[in-house]
Length: 59
Image (cartoon, rainbow, N blue to C red; front, side, top):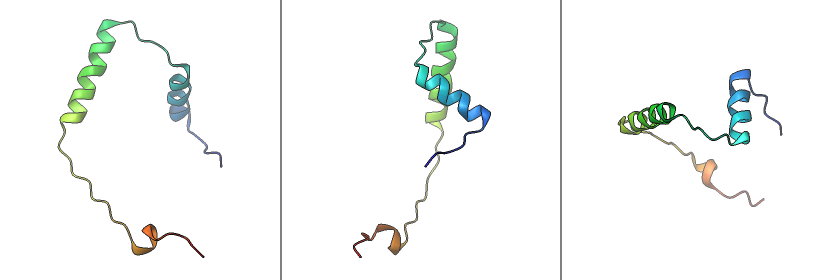
């Protein structure tokens, strides 16, 4: 199954696959700051699983 990506998502996918190294210390610092800010957000996640979601499909 192939998923159609929009141009923004495709750009992310293409750059991820290239595995480009970032040499700019300012850009690295910006990414680190952004990652820390994201991880410091306290958000809860509720996951609901219905009975039919976790039963094995042994028919």
